[in-house]
Image (cartoon, rainbow, N blue to C red):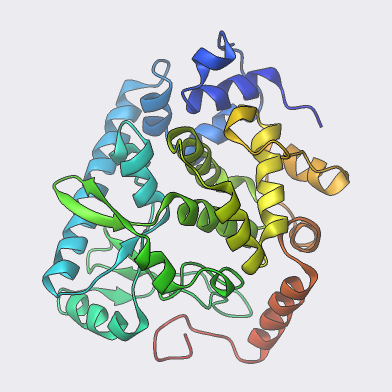
Length: 338
């Protein structure tokens, strides 16, 4: 499938790469509004100024600042309890790679905590009204083996996704908690210093997330985080990333991610020289879903899992985990079959 030039131009404008790529074409394509909805108008406006409704922007920006306030407050309470954690995913990317971090703060705050500290963290925040709940309930129960249902404040305004592994199987085969903590760095988040993963670990966690979701188009924020990471991290270690991906059985997912970045118009100098767009109908269908966003069917998701996201052993294990969950669903709560 050929990606419309206007979609490529829009993607490149989100990466601050217009100087390299030449003039931006402001023409639209059918999926543009969906992309903006996935990213939020405030985030798009912060990266490509002009054209957004002022009332919508004001509301988006206020919400983002509110999210920053409640999430950094939760981090302060955790620090007061003497518990170390590493902020993952969107929160980390927001303060490292975006000109307006609050515009990127959408959804949960993902926190990595050591297993031996998990109960203390739960108790410290439960005393302030936090409780588990609010997650989806598929027929096979809660699938993740790395995190739990959202741990949310009493008013529901702050949702924490507590991780005891950087992400679901198979990532922690090659990247475990202690590796992430050992190479974590500090970033200023508002008025607080917060630990976040190193660039290579952030990149592989993004790849793992995209693969876990079978590269569905609502992963646009994760892909943009990754592309902006590559645009900002000038000493990125591709050899280290690929070695960790191989240990984690995520080499196929990494290749698919690089192909998707390339197909959407990510400048080639941000990617390894051997990055290539995968051939075949399965990737073409995936790309079509990104250009004109629509949710893949269950059959499409399973096909993409087997052909684009996971090696055969991993895909088989995930399938068996779903089947076992039909018999004994997992609740997603620590200490309760979670």
